[in-house]
Image 1 (tube, rainbow, N blue to C red):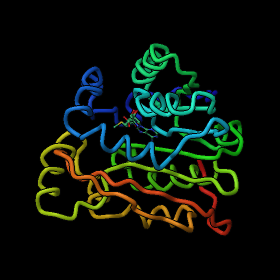
Image 2: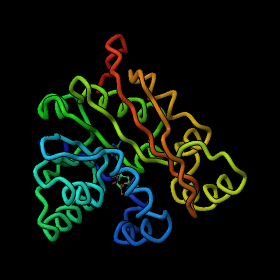
Image 3: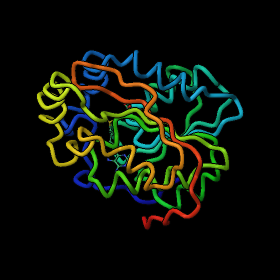
Image 4: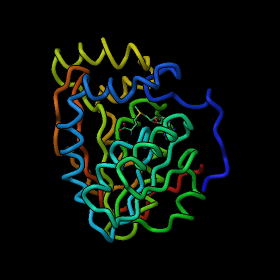
Amino acid sequence: MSDIKPAADTFTPALGQHWLTPLYDVAIRTLTRESVWRRALANQVDPRDGDGILDVGCGTGTFLTLLANRAPKAHLVGIDPDPEVLARARLKAAKAGASIEFVQGFLLEDVVTRLGPLTKVVSSLVLHQVPLAEKLRILSLMRRALADGGEAHIADYGAQTTPLMRWLFQRTVQRLDGSENTQPNADGVLPDLMREAGFRQVEERAKIPTPTGSISIYWCAGSDLRAPRTKP
Ligand SMILES: C[S@@+](CC[C@H](N)C(=O)[O-])C[C@H]1O[C@@H](n2cnc3c(N)ncnc32)[C@H](O)[C@@H]1O
């Protein structure tokens, strides 16, 4: 769908370095209590067969495949700039017999327009990896992708509120991804950015301690039509 194929040096790959991508699924499984936070996120998304759901930065497609198992007739779309993770995602979906559309690229205005209004948008473990301006741009476009009454569901490293979680986050995620993009998350910037992106209702509904820092599950709704439009 997206015409632009991003160059490999224009985004941070799934595990911080392209050569580590083959290890992504096993790393997430063993180091993030994956089954706990993905189940919490999927329960919150509560996919239904009539839903149109976009996963921004879908990576290797694990979450979309989980949603497809729960709602096989939902219209599921994943977007990611990295062709290597998308190849893995397509394989995973095919093996699971899941019908999912995968698009290579960044989330841009044209993608939002072409997809049409969606009932739900999701994103997991993406925002901590991107610069502050990109966090806001992604959140603003996620909001704009939603139909009236739509919801955004986001799982990511949020405010690290205990010394142990701060230490674990520094020793793992920040070692891989650096601190420039990750520290704002650890300092708790996400809820403010979600409001700035135009969501009137923002809730952190769970905070899950993991060996790599705490992962928060956010729910956002109530589009604020006065919020500024973000340029792609
Ligand atoms: C840590 S992985 C998370 C993948 C997946 N969402 C998951 O839960 O396993 C982050 C993903 O974000 C993608 N990404 C990096 N920069 C992005 C951007 N600006 N917009 C959208 N996705 C981006 C990467 O290619 C990578 O696949």
